[in-house]
Figure: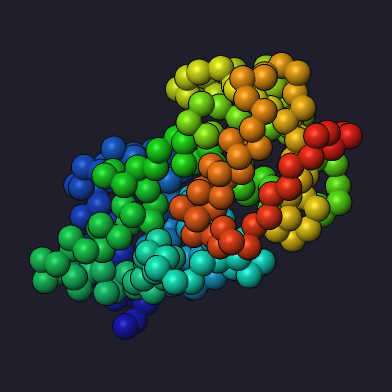
Length: 237
């Protein structure tokens, strides 16, 4: 199609979205801007960039793929990302013209996680934790982390365990931390951790850290079998 046809298709899609409540509820947000940008741009690289800017899960998939850790079998969200990135604005507009907009709208909600597919705060925090781990330099000093009830792991560079607890409270993740310590990257997918924080001693069971982290890796599309988590009494950092 011509450039003018593509521009017309985008206006058709934009009008539909403006009147669609799940999207209208996002008015003025960065998420809404990235959704429109992806639908407007036809360049595959730009589309991937817009999705990565809006989705921590997609950023994690890219990191997993880069490291050979992306789970390929039965990875529904990876398939949805691929379908969204392949969906042209012209095809979307054509679906609207046929009255078949339900499927692409559902795909938008699933991939950008809004409306009926809004991500739970716990899942977002765990993805961010894994992203932080995968950005650590191998062999470098570790970072402090806290373990919260329900298997939520959290870290923020430069903050104390008490400051991290305050962050979690603001996000509505109630409950005091039950353990804490340091975690470091010892290899591509090898991580060593301790539970040596003296602030929280409700548990000293390494599986309280290991099990929720591996579940989160799998839930976010990673190969949990490729991750190794070694407990140490104290990492010395």
